[in-house]
Length: 151
Image: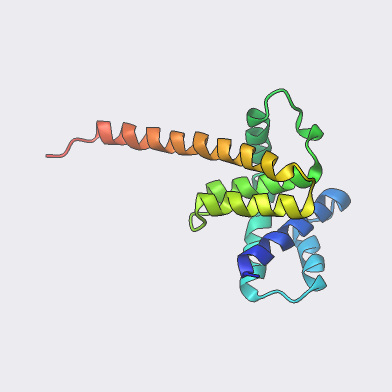
């Protein structure tokens, strides 16, 4: 298993523990990382991912709520919410993770740790957020291009 996949699983376990206990993410991450031997790269990426999710929780939840119209966030299974938050952070904050990889990895986590239908649910939400975000980025690039004149 690659170090990023291991990091994502470690991050999922840590973020779930944070939700259940209310303990600080750095404390929980240290505890959870003792369950098995992780590479330095995996620990660093898990730390970065859990930190991003913790720091951008409100924005992630807002994006999820905007995408799942007519559903309250609290009605989404906790594991699915955490996986969605992680996927959003990888899509929007991690420049070195291709979008398709971020979405596929979130789907695999959902299939492995959540319900039978979670993979499709996570795919739909993240794909919609990705398309919306990429559309926004393209519009900004077009706006900048149309305002720029070359002489």
